[in-house]
Length: 512
Image 1 (cartoon, rainbow, N blue to C red):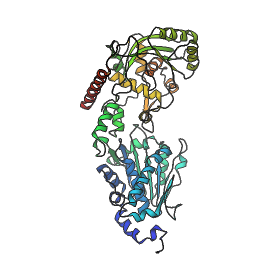
Image 2: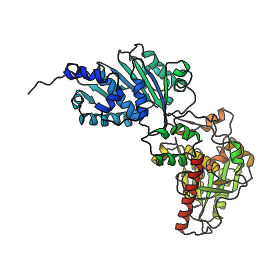
Image 3: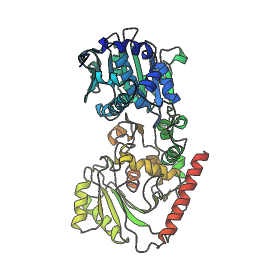
């Protein structure tokens, strides 16, 4: 039996392997990893290949950037002796669920290909990939640092050094600057990829002031999902509907890989809300609607109000749903900072008793818990507890929204823009002021996040009690019971009508 070679550098095949692939990651991806690469991935690999390269990629969904990063990491590991590759992201789980999964898949492809021999020389562990016999000096590993502690990224100098940053738009700028300071050798490389979630910061600047077209060191690229051969037309059509059209900020960021053109930091403009005040009702009298009482309990001391909104609703879900939720605001029976909780609970109970099969949704943050207990003592049925700081339940919503608050307010935004909600004139001033002043941003995972009430107060923005209450009606966990006086429509008729509305919305979004 021939003696097994323990060191990769001692294998006679390795020198020719390096000569073939050390400056050609595209060829490495095809011939060694057995991958079918897209033209976007080839552009990324070509940018990564030279010594000293700086590559920054803004990407939409499904373009293959994660697989490209994993391929690039293995290419650097196997073609450069004693090389160090560091991967970073806002959260370690991002790398483990993304790049690390791809590393394992690619190794399986290598083992089935013409260069299967080289797979015997490296090992993939939970947090480290290393060349056997040289695990302390020749490796791929993760490195993250908490916000405010950029020194955790230091100490990574090496001749053959590659830094890879995923979801780079969400990485604190001080951390990225520490990485920049480590790239002291002319052979060091750096690549950053991200959805372009914010129009400021270091990642943003690498696509603008620091880009090659502005005489900077960064080769900036865009991996647009619309142009990717591995993204289906159906996926694009679904996202046009789900994200509210091609002109929406979310579509620009998550599909087109573009930094948002809309500089407005608020979810909705005043004019969009004005159009829905005294607008024709969106639910017919003979449709099988349900009654909701949506209650936001004030914190007391006249800082904010206790608000109860009566709304008729029908349907469920956002614009992507077959029959997305529609709402008519019918009344605002409570709107005061002066009543104590006992009086307010009594008025809510009385309003509920006058409505058929009414469901009462109560914000249980702060003083809302005591308010709900009062309703329970009054033996009011159909109570729904709202903890809208909690994460969403549905997987697709968890990936889009930081919490339930973001989910319902974004879906309310879509309902306003798509004429699926109508408002009444009472409290119009507060409705307009509050609804047009809901600040938001995309977090490091490209999820919608609404600025907290405390931070809003610091900016001089009042608590949006009325708007929040209306938003409760669009929460994923707020269901309704059909009112007895609501009309009964054949289910096949409803399905046909829902499909027609969905197709019309899709066609309108696509035309835009």
